[in-house]
Amino acid sequence: MGEGIRVGRIFGINIHVDWSWLFVFVLITWSLASTIGRFRADLDSWAVWVLAALAALLFFGSVLAHELAHSLVARAQGLPVRHIVLFIFGGVSNIQREPDSPGGEFVMAIVGPLTSLAIGIVLLVAAGGSLVRFAGLVQRPQDLLGALGLSGALALWLGSVNLLLGFFNLVPAFPLDGGRVVRSIFWALTHNLQRATRWATAIGQGISWAFILAGVAMVFGAQIPLLGTGLINGLWLAFIGWFLSNAATRSYRHVVIQDILADVPVTKIMRRNPPVVSPDISVATLVHEHIMGSDDYGFPVVEQEALVGLVTLEDVRSAGRDRWDTLTVREIMTPRAELLTVTAQDDGATAFNTLMQRDVRQLPVLEDGHLIGLLRRNDLVRWLQLQSQTDL
Image (cartoon, one colour):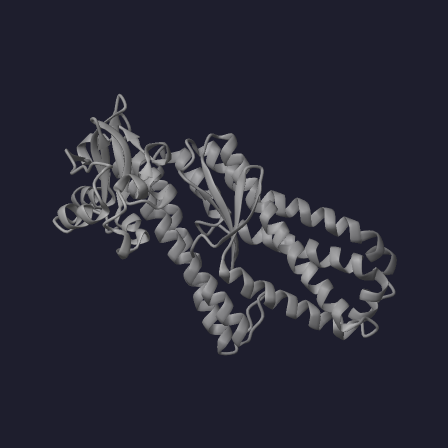
């Protein structure tokens, strides 16, 4: 899953939509339109599709509220939140590092499902008066839809979906919210985040494989309580299990990386005395005298012994081959004010998070404002390969 397309900003947090979200949006809209059209033949077809699309948007609004709850609690704990992405399985908050304590992990994990459950209960209560009034009279779905009215039926459906969303996220399959709650408990007991993550990951992968096997069984006609049977339901459940298993493995690797890099000074990993270039040389000179003679992706730009920017291969590509002789490095580089940097006092884990934050390949290392080295992504990978006893 990529970052998707930025569609807005709420409480200072960027909201992105992945392309896979469109597939689920269309699927939910089509399913609801078929249901409404079957039970409310008095409505025009355009009205049916508008109502179905509105219901689908409100559902994803509920998913967004769930993720915003995670993100706002994370920010309250001082954890940077890059963005929220809505995608095929709902949503994910891109929180840049792990919580500082088991208690922080527990609160941040549990607040999402509690938000979904609260939304579900409020919506069901909003439709509850009508349900109680017509409980003894309504025997068929079309009668129920007519008795509740469109707004009541929408509240009933959306409330039920939010309850399912809340309860599903409480399943102890790491990295679902329930799995993170379990990890916070293990963390509190062992005082070791990596060990707690390993145990939570093992439980999560066991549940994921149970989903996969149950899904395969459903494809071949098995009737699973609460889940049903059939090809589509089975494939979907198996796909969810596969996704959760991979997500658990990635989350564990991330924790292992953080553990290895924590308290390792950047100065032990960085490249000292990296090749630098002047801002006044032409792009052609940069290419022929610097880029072609090394395997470096980026070059610090230094003027009078002060860092003024960074120029990369991507900057050169963007310049256009026909302009290399006339453009200078100063004109295509990223200026110092826009650069992500780390200091000599930072550790490897901080540098790793900074690299991932903007998906860059190198970071200038500064001491008292002066360039003392360049930390490349390859340098971190090499350090991890030398230090790790785990298959990353």
